[in-house]
Image 1 (cartoon, helix red, strand yellow):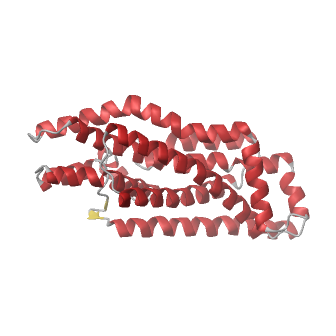
Image 2 (cartoon, one colour):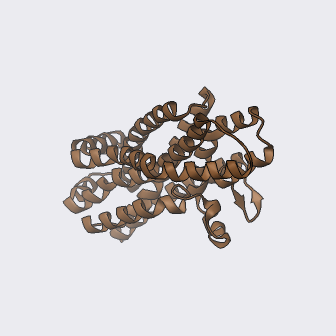
Image 3 (cartoon, one colour):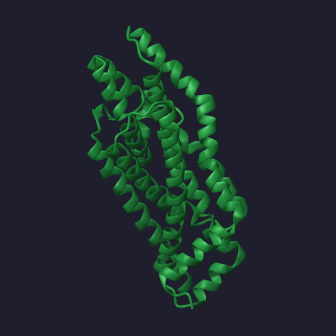
Length: 302
């Protein structure tokens, strides 16, 4: 019987990749976003950046502009994909309820926490694979539009992706757990896909929101994940600006405008604190998810 967590994880991953519709939807989503971002948002970001430079009386090369716009687009795409792909990958948990497979599994002596972690780990592995592929494609895109990354920047980008996938998987596990129909799962997926990019600052920089909304969004962990990606994707661009003689005031203004600098009620948030916030959110979400499974099992026994 499949009582070990390893067997359950293997079973979930196998079913996920066997479902071609679910797998290809998850895989294609980041690629579609890259095409859409590169087609529509890149022109908006480029015009904004050029206008800011012209207003400051600075002249920049097309490569530097491409690196800045590309870094912003790539960080936006990865920030969204790490969460939305996790919601798509985690639909197996809902499908097991619909098909009755979850009931069959729980007939065996499987602890609720073991079953909960098996869904989490299988979703994590599947999402991580897709997001790593997306990151590779994004790096290829940056090499085309303007490359200013070092090996350290790339390593930190992958670390950010890992943390955001951990967060996205934990969040999707908590949200998807109560769902029991295909309609509910589709509705949640649509809402997350449409809204998450806005609340995490991927579609539009938080600096462009109203002051009140900025304060509300500053409480959301995904915001800091997006900022971490921004900082590591654009670090080389800002360093090059300094090498070309850009005043620090202009560089800092640009960092503010693209959310590399985040402020919590007026206080600038350090990168180390962003990591603490994101990791804490991951741990809390996992604990909540496991607790939901344990409580449900206890209620059924009662």
